Amino acid sequence: MSGHSKFANIKHKKEKNDAAKGKIFTIIGREIAIAVKEGGPDPANNSKLRDVIAKAKANNMPNDTIDRGIKKAAGDLGSVNYEHVTYEGYGPAGVAIIVEALTDNKNRTAANIRSAFTKGGGSIGTPGCVSYGFSSKGQILIDREECEMDPDDLMMLALDAGAEDFTDSEDSFEILTAPEDLGSVRTALEEAGIPMASAEETMIPQTTVKVTDEGALKQLNRTLDMLDEDDDVQAVYTNLED
Image 1 (cartoon, one colour):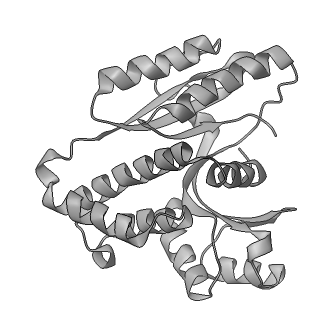
Image 2: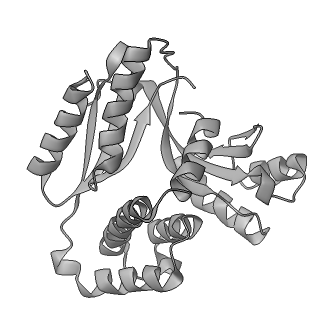
């Protein structure tokens, strides 16, 4: 999805009810646990944990909640058993869908995700069946209303810090980086006092599919809603055109 639609989705989720906020916090809590297990509890020496903390703050997770999550993960390393799993498939009208999950029960997660695809008229495919059409990128989104810096100055700041691309949209700015440069670009923006709506790795479609059939869109949205409600699902990427 483009920066514009992703930004609109972020704003929508932040304005949702407490249950939706709880889902976001659950996602981030699992990412904290994995980051601590893989690189330790000190963000100064763990770039992945720094990235997750930045994501947590962008989603208004309280500092004490973040700290508790880090301490809990550090003291409970032996029982942190979440696994990264990725599913690929197709929705109605051939829309490509990638689902990333963190789970402690792969059978449960696989069944739930397969059900979401099936009930929306889609199907799960084999690994790699759609991911070849996406590029892994670092993506930073900035709310235009919250950014006081001149757009040209912001673009130069981002590019000088290592960004690959800068897009100026009606309500947001989108900055794309190589995945390994996300942290350094985000740090440069933080030091300049730029508030970020999100800063995380994502999958950008190389081409998009336009769906005009209302029935197909309804089925696709059913699948996406079911995936959004699943606590194991961390992220969903599609090549649906806005």
